[in-house]
Length: 339
Image (cartoon, rainbow, N blue to C red):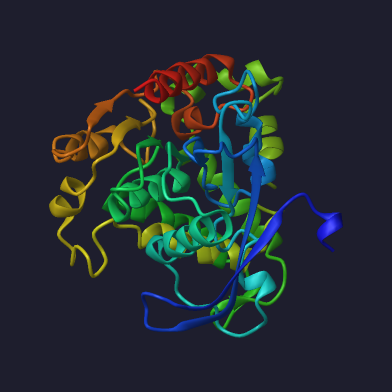
């Protein structure tokens, strides 16, 4: 099977979770790009975002991309619940354990140290849920992370963000395929409802006011909603989506034994060069959350807040077909890597 896929599997073994449960034979799917330097000082960790697999995010990697594999050894670990790493869809029919970002970073750390012998990260880069993982890395391993780029992310799931996710869950689980706490078949109507909810939150008021969707070739607002959002999440297992929503909602860098819920202390523990890049019009990872965090990064080597000046809302941080926002990200990351 290994010859039929373009990624590797790290067998983490039986993992003790924050919840107190054990996850038997936990698996972390990952892909690498570029070559590890002899000094092992050119590593970039690039965790995946909500529902994404590395196939979806590797567009950002290239000699002329935001992350250059000719200079750096880039590792994309697939977030649990995305269908490649351990997920409800590939872990049997029993209840899927409650996971946190802390569990995720623990296994990613195991991958880096045991598989590659890596003890230093030049950069942790992430968008959305990937950005939250980058923040967790900086707080949980402050002596290992030299730089962290948090793109449209935050150090914890804000109450407003939590409410957004409640609307996503309600739309998806309102489908009759959701019974006894899990999906027993594909929720066709639920996927569409989730997409329609997401369309309103992910893009900005200005995006719709100025009909920016026309730039991508859509002929009407309904055409955009149907082709861009109605089936956007149908490619993923619905139980996997719920597992990742849970990880997202529980996100908090201080929710661990090391910091015992002291959020300010967790932020003060960070030593890396920190680049916070919220979307200027992001509706659920609000700029104000990063503004509050910035003043508490008192021991970071440097800490800057550079909002992405875009009407693309949350999607400004994942500008697959948006050259202006991509150019902004590329310039900011080049400046960060020069520190």
